Image 1 (cartoon, helix red, strand yellow):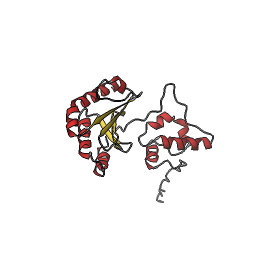
Image 2: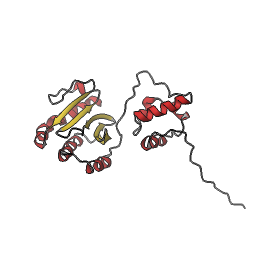
Image 3: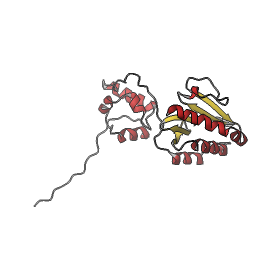
Image 4: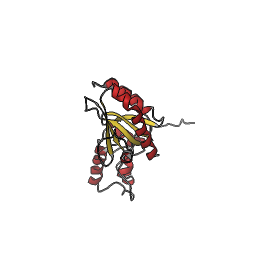
Length: 205
């Protein structure tokens, strides 16, 4: 009796353009390996994938257009909105902070601890080259590390204008700022920061 010969399965041929390793991994994980498959998904749906940013979507859109194709039309009311990581990337944030050179590094760690302690469902990741926090995918707040003289938090969430606090600055459509001068200031504002986050979480629940 002849032995059955098993041939190794060839990996699927991909015609995706160069959109960067994180975006490519995200698409592959979801089963998207060809441009033709992307005609069945909308821009908003792709934007939900962790690792797929505006640049990757733009490149894919241009590649589709060159073939005479396009993304699936968005549903009525569907917005191109980026979600936070559904899994907390504490390892990535730890590694990032170990290599961070910032005069207020200790203070940054202190504020990070306060934020994470507000709710066990708060996830963290790296966004805008800084620690960022979301609640079940809805972004809450991200550090702005370009400011070296104080701790600068950016609350970027559509619900943040509904949170009233004298410590929230700015009058943007979906953003507010909060600042800390030093460790003493952090301790003085700790309760208010927790209150702001709890209100924002409640509004997003």
